[in-house]
Image (cartoon, rainbow, N blue to C red; front, top):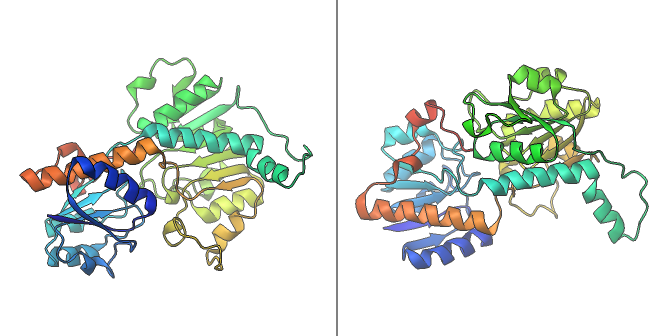
Length: 343
């Protein structure tokens, strides 16, 4: 069986070529994103490998079925870009990477917070211009702050423990309590209302589902502490971007660090330095001195890329050899309804 990788970049290709030395699969890479306009490129392939900004809607999945596709391998944990109900109807198996390196995302979230709280990114550019003034670089300490962690899966639980080690009081919220955090003197489970009201810093680590879409909206922001810091390395649409912008303008929100953005599909992973940015909200966010935005790179470590490549190729190999993929990697409409998350 042949596998076609969509939406690939050099870092993808390097990781998968290296890992494939142990699997010997027939793989090809293209830069095009997978959607209903490009699905027919998968003709003569039995497997496609998709990334987070591909759009596997009903039309796309029908086209994939019509060209003889057997397996969709997601080289991600998140799956909100796939119409799983349609995939089930088409009889298409969808496999993902349920966990690759939660430390990669958790550590990046902490890095964003540290840069924002101590204005490290501003200082870096100043010094490069030989401006060694400290005016305007006053930050704040994390010690003794209250940090709210929304979502306590693998990533969120690591963030909670790291923040506790800074001497923070950590409030967590999740529909399913993580037993690994029980009994920690500085980590306490609470409800979402109390978390928002009490937290100086809020970090998001949830999957994007209909229930979590725009979890952070104007109403919820209004109930937060004045000057709250918001960190998002989960999914962009967890936050209503217009409400975030308004909160920043009124200074209700004291700062935001975003590795994801709800309309990132046409922007992130691309070089737009010679183009006009068409997204007015993103353009405005980029003008705020207390906003730090990165282009969905929290996962981007050598360790995570290797784990993603090995798990993805192993799923494809097992499917080719046996027609079966390990059940913990299978994602469908039923498992989604039962609350399977990407964290």
